[in-house]
Each structure stands twice: as C-alpha cells, then as structure tokens.
Image (cartoon, rainbow, N blue to C red; front, side, top):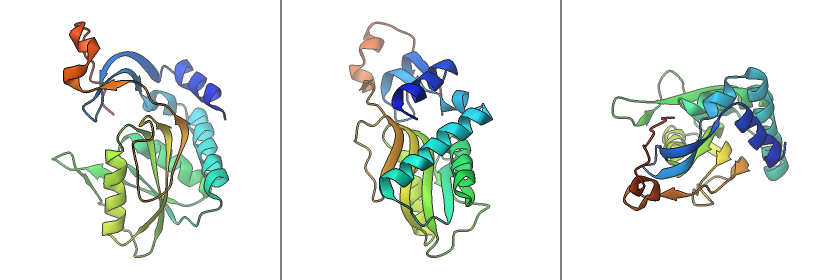
Length: 191
C-alpha cells in the first residue's frame, strides 16, 4: 500500500481532518488524524495493519516477536490486527487516574519479545511509556510499528521504528500558533 492509497483511505473515511486542533502533545496543528474513523471499518483496519506488518518485514526482516503491545485506546485496534496478521498474542497498557500508562490484566514474562503498535505518533510519548513498561517488566522491545508518524523524524526510540505513512504536518507551540492569532476556534479531538 503506497502513501497515496493510504491517504485516500484516510480521506474517504474522514479520518484526516483539516482545521485548528490541539494535539495530545499540547501542540497545535492544522491537521489531525482521527485513526478511529478509519479503523472502525474492520476490512480497512485489516488491510492497513497487514500493510504495516508487510512494511515491518520488508524493512527489518523477519523479527522474532512473541507479543504485540499497544497503548490504549488508539493503539488497541492496530495492535489487535497486527497480532492477528503475525499470529501472536496481543496485550495493551492503559491510563491510570493520573493519565499515565500502566500494565494490568496481562503478564509480561522475562525475555518476552514485543512489537509496540500504535496508530499515530507526534512526539511518541505514549509509545515511549509503553516501551518503558515492557522493559520494567523484563520484556524486550524488538520494534515499533505505527500507521502514521507525524513526528517528522523527531520521535526516536531505542528500538527500530517503522511507519506506514510518514508526514510532518505543521505544528506550533500554543503561543506561536497563527490559527490562534486569527481567532480560529480550537478543537480538542482527543485520541
């Protein structure tokens, strides 16, 4: 699946939005990927996640992966579909009352090999928290796979990162945002 085909799927499902958005990172942008709108269609979710798995294999070769792990909530569908495509277990981490990610419900075994799956990253904070949880429980992160990397190469991890689509949409600190200065309403779309 090439970039044009993937962008077309995002646009057809209204998952690529244009406007004035506050991202989870706190930055403002004129674009927002609401992957849930794309992933709500199981056939499309399966197609794009299969394409991500194929890109990971092409880029990194055959990795030994025991389990897929994803940060809730955006990464859950991606992680599930990647796990299905690879035929391995899938687990997730979730937010606690303070908004931090934590591991509950599932067990990580010492030496267990993971692929972290996520829908979109801008700064990669949730992915890094997930990596830290895996390491804290004795697991090993072999790779990270995301549908959309909007970091412009700024998100860096100890494990290799593979994304299906790489973009560097314009982002601004809130005090430098021209859309704020123009008085455009700010939308908080969430995850």
